Image 1: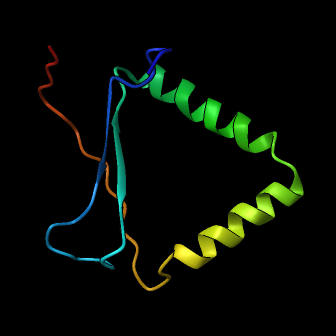
Image 2 (image 1 turned 180 degrees about the vertical axis):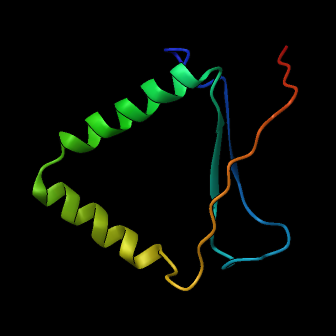
Amino acid sequence: MADGLITVYQIMVDEIHTQGPNWSYLIYVAPSTEALDRLNDSFAARVAKRSAEENRAINDALDTTVIPSGHKDYIGRISAYAQK
């Protein structure tokens, strides 16, 4: 947010569960496609700096929380956005 790559974020859970009840979603709004590209590049750079041990620890942690039978992705387009 400090770099202007994300204008707002939210952590959301389902009120009506269509997936497992422990799922949570991180939703963020980027002000432009250029900001989204920079954000993705920063994520990739952070992953590239991890050691093999760090990657193994992260993957082990994810393996305990991921539900392999359920998966859904979506991209939403916001046609209007305002902030005060």
